[in-house]
Length: 165
Image (cartoon, rainbow, N blue to C red; front, side):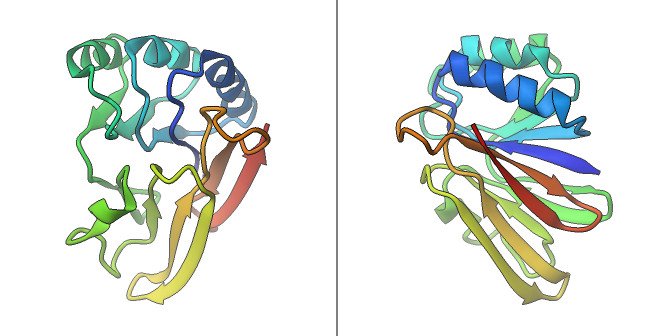
């Protein structure tokens, strides 16, 4: 199973259009958004995805009624952090702000995803689950020119790929 990871889109509709193209051409199984979508129009821009999208709300996702309506309309699934699930026999946890891992992230998680910092992060540590991977692809909001990126995680092989655009 391969999943796309996107964070901190902050209403950059041009970038979201490009992200949808990237993820669709990569033929992923699912997409995770790690928060800071900000407005419903951004959720509607993700409607072109050919796979389901899951995610967590970030600190800038303050228009919750509109966001939740757009999420429901597009059949996506979002929640307040942490989002915890098991996909391809891998335990994953998703938050927006990495400080939200406190009290939730354990050595039984295989993959921990976050956003918020707008900075790339890839760490691997030995844990009870084997190797634990902590990943943030960085930002997609266009705030830092030349740093727009999304990630692809192969959950079977636990390989991470950063796709800059």
